[in-house]
Amino acid sequence: MPLARPFLAAAASAVLLAGAAAPQAPADPEPKMIVIGFLGGVLKHDDRRRSEVLLAERLRQEFPAATVRVFENAKRKEAHTLILRELEAGDSREARIVLYGHSWGGSEAVALARQLGSEGIPVLLTVQVDSVQKVGQNDASIPPNVRQAVNFYQTGGWLHGRRHVVPEDADHTTLLGNFQVNYRGHPVGCAGYPWYEMTFAKTHSEIECDPSVWNRIETLIRLQLRPESGTPR
Image 1 (tube, rainbow, N blue to C red):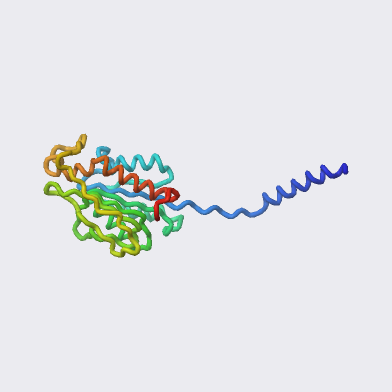
Image 2 (cartoon, rainbow, N blue to C red; image 1 turned 120 degrees about the vertical axis):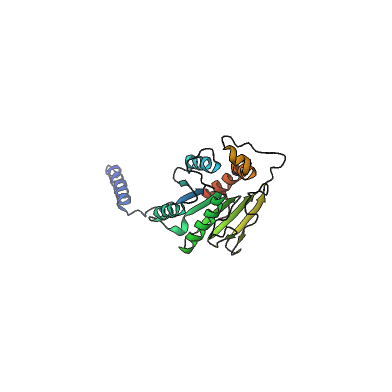
């Protein structure tokens, strides 16, 4: 019996060494998380008065592994290039891509989704906020590579957005809703907005700075980036 203890120790060492030498299966890479926002008008991507920009900042803090960027609506090409670069190392079919925008930015979000669809890249969610169609685009029709879409709009003033969007293929795209917001009788203050915006496009600006609208949008985006929460994907 005096050899029992050394033998057991040697056997344990052999097992540990064998385990260390065994090839380990590479861990599956986490799907890329990409959130792209588009501003309306001729606004700059770093204008911190805007809900689109503030939302991106909060998402970056909560999801440090995600790529979250805001672009001027004239820079869809740059946004598209960023997405393709981010997807180079992974499976684009597993990517979690969310696109959102206000005014012309809503139209650009749909146009970018359509462009990605032509390349076989799925989009989890598009969000349009008082979407205004740009020339040569169709912001009313959601392409079938988009899994979920939602539209927020208001009808006040001379400048207002798309009232209804529809999926091109309801079997592939779930429309979460076309939600109207009314500011008659309960205006929203937009701190720091230029006087001319609040004079000539008041309600169009109010929906951009309305925290109740953007809180709902943020919740939808966060659920898409956390599929384990139970949100259908």
